Image 1: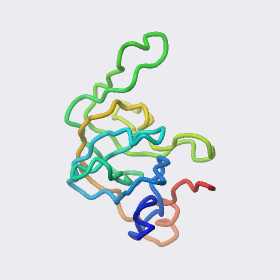
Image 2: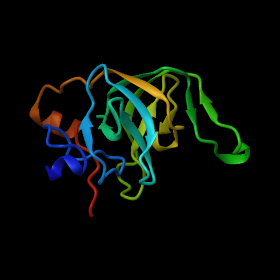
Image 3: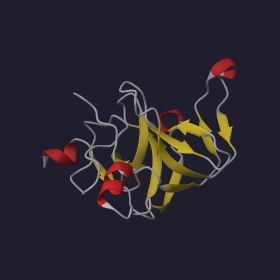
Image 4: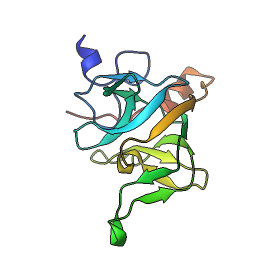
Length: 153
């Protein structure tokens, strides 16, 4: 099915993974999923499924994740030879910069309030989906809370 080859299949949620994985097979996240940060060769990183690293896992804003180790980010700035370590193992998936079409949107918010773009994480890190976002009480609230950034092709 073509929809399964381009972004998240029709699973009642957003129509596509936000991190520009248009040509990568994907599926929605489930509680208990074991994910791996992975470079899909599309110019960005995302979460890969444990059963197949070629399958991107679509994570909704508000999803709680637990990492196996402290999170490592790619080196940036003046000390670009050294990975940046975030001294936390839990995070909540967020979307930022929604008003900017040409920007990465998927991010992780850590307990200290720090927000880090998912695409800046080093590859190969293991995370577990602890909890999916709570279900909104009305259809209008649900539509707004699950709204993902739309891409114009």
